[in-house]
Length: 438
Image 1 (cartoon, rainbow, N blue to C red):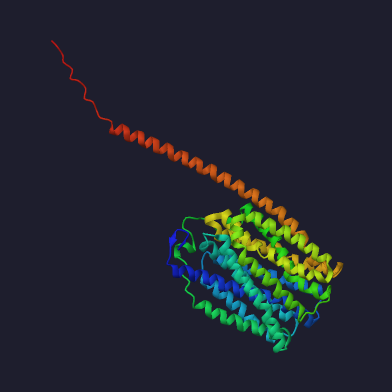
Image 2 (tube, one colour; image 1 turned 180 degrees about the horizontal axis):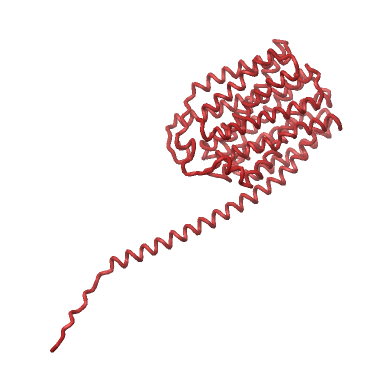
């Protein structure tokens, strides 16, 4: 097995892969427990939609802070330290919720816990760009398949905690914290040997500050933000839509819905890898956005039966994140680890205010609008994706021309060298002696 150009033992390679995958499992458990946990928190404290919107915005801010810190840490700290810090930052606040008796106090705990999502996002994707160099679509899909497994486990841990411990969200985060401790212990025993030469490429002079000056990085980040908001809208607002608009039950129907969504979500990431590699990254994202627009639109028209369409949409929006990371790998090549981290960081900033905007829409125009805004983001995401595609092709043409110039110079130098060698090897014919006659 190889990581870039450095050969490593098979055991080390699979140790790195296992570390990425178990971390994605942990991230899925924590992040997607919110579909039940956040709804219970809102109900427990009787928080308004606007307060809930501010709450989700603060979580986005926490996520962005972690993205920024992790992006700079990639250049100076060993990757395994970032993973370990992420686990600690996730576990401690889960137990801190046991002492939170207000919506604000609980929000502070979640604010801290959500930093781990940012840390895991950056270091997981950065490691993947160094490890996955063959069958990227398949390997990235399997990586996020593990996230999907965690996304199925998280809501069910929440449901079982509510059922048996019967202590509102306190029981949910007690069980989540315990689960994450177990996964953290397993992670620490997995060999993690990232080659020293690959922690910071000696051939690349790219830095975070230089990356922030590249226009394509901003274009990719904004595009990624719009596409990701489709998934975020379904994750953050679908459960409230089911309860407040369609009159489903928060204790039973919402966990069942979430389990179904992430079962479909996970199956999609398990089976879509070969299709992604065959169809192409851009084409597959277009297919996903078009399918989400149609399926969600039909679901809004179906009333209570629309829940089945919302579940089905998970098959398509689940693929957009890992496939876009593949786009970044292909776009930036040897600089992908750092540049993709910067793209994710900026993307987090782009989506920061959207939670508050969606909460304001629900509060002032009715509880349907936050989720329905996902249709708008499908369209905007598709338009921006076309811009990224054109930028990518233009970059490839420029690089091809530069390579052709370099090749021509090499040929010319080779020809001149050959001519010089031929001249030096040409036999010297001695001149005839000049006879002077008297």
